[in-house]
Amino acid sequence: MTGTTTPRKTVHLAVYDTFADWETGHATAWLARGGYEIRTVGPTTDPVTTIGGLRVTPDLALADLRAEDSALLILTGADLWDAGDDLAPFAAEARTFLDAGVPVAAICGATLGLAREGLLDDRPHTSAVSFYLAASGYKGADHYTEADAVTAGDLITAGPTEPVAFAREVLGRLGVFEGGKLDAWYGLFHDSDPAAYEELNA
Image (cartoon, rainbow, N blue to C red; front, side, top):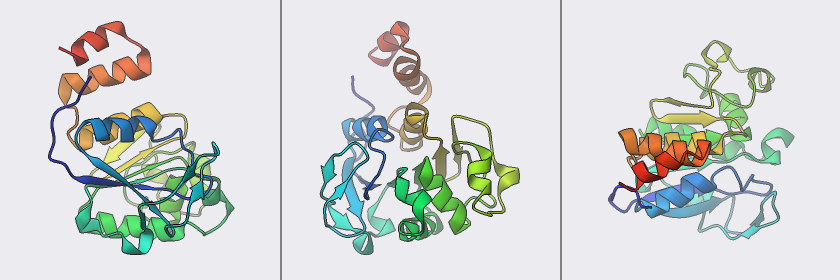
């Protein structure tokens, strides 16, 4: 199964200690199969350890990341989002990306970081539950949407239980799959629909 051929461009995946490694696997795997290079970005280039115990050595440090070199920034959930402000620089970088017109996709605890940064105050968004973000004191509660994943312009958000819906929005936003192919991809990986397999490979 392959996606539509796309120009080879870089997607940046933020990695940090305690990042939830299951949340972005569908997205990054199919972006890579669709022609995108995945590069990891850490607080520094020192190795980090995921919740699942995997050690990842970042390709570059956050200080060296530039929006103009990227097609998308993906921010994963992590215990550190709930523990304090250690990951606040990643939320600040998300603002830089959005200001430059480069998409950002955030799932799970990363949405809390965006809320603290003020990036969800005036955009439709979702997360785990509404009161999770409300605890941040943000001003965007009226824009909270009860949905698996939400795309609002250049910003994609999703809750921790929706890695497939998150990937659907990411893959659609970057044109890896479109229309019926995107629906088929989601039907296969979310609903285990055998007919979707045939459609995806037609």
